[in-house]
Length: 482
Picture (cartoon, rainbow, N blue to C red):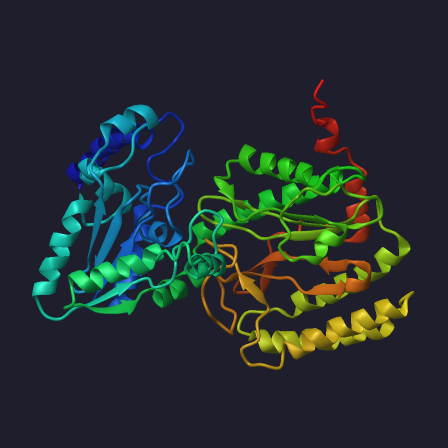
């Protein structure tokens, strides 16, 4: 035992300098130990039986942007080298990683990058069993193809990269395919075609549903990263409340939010900023950010960072210049309904039953609320009716999952501990360009549900208090060009 411990100490002193080959930047993420990556791969092995799972990592980025691994690949090994491949063998219970050879010229320019020459180090860091150069993948697959018939599981769904959720990845591929002057084959489809054509002996099946199911329940370390992303998102929203004054441009709030994200260690944005004032708030994913805010209009602020490959999604709605009596009336009705939904959420319940219970309370709130305009009364009634219609199907949903993607993967109707999701019902009055929407990060626990973004003000009085504080945008005005 003493010899083993001394060996570990020697190994540790050897790898620490390499882990930080570029000062302040680790070659391998420190958010997860190799044991957690190994457990994820073991879960895949249990799901595929004696089959093989094959994943293609992300390619080198186009332009001067930092490399970011795809979510699926990172989830299983944590290796952030471009053009890498991962082969998980369910029969032998072994995992092999394939990475390119070292590019010494690039390393002299950009810094150390894990390569095939770092095989021993990579095995220690990620817990994989073997590491080979990428050019040996075809040979090794050929060996598997010579034996008994094997099933190979490959993700059929598009990979999730920077600021990418699957719904957007699918849309991107569809846009390219429908362009008669482009018509390019998606990278994932091309990879599938190559494996099928080169190794027709394999039976190919979809790995995506297996990974989706595993990603649905978050570990403690995953939740810690989501919690930090939520914290930064909330701080940015609070700064938005301070800085959103009449005459401020939407992009100024975007800049303040980005400062908070990157100043606190985020590696990017979870999605483009949805900072929409006045009529722009009617568009669910408005992101141009060019409009100048006017006094008395609504402002929607929906923005979050990417922290160690994990996201958040938080939204607040505030009036520029403060609440008018009419705005307060509508907002407080909506907020009471929003709280009724959150109160009904409990582990072990289906989304349908939660919605049905919430609607009962929403009806009571509606019955005791007095509206200053018939238009507001009708819109509020329609809002509750619409939410009730959404509860009629057994497959009803509350919102969307959040994790490695803002619109995260996975399917479930019953809530289980470790799930993270948001709700975002919208009260719309198109006649007056009103689209009130809140969104919070909800974590299902053994005891109930935790609102991880509850610290972000949502009560009228709390919002007004923050809005009176000096804002970053006012403290650091734009350059006037002189």
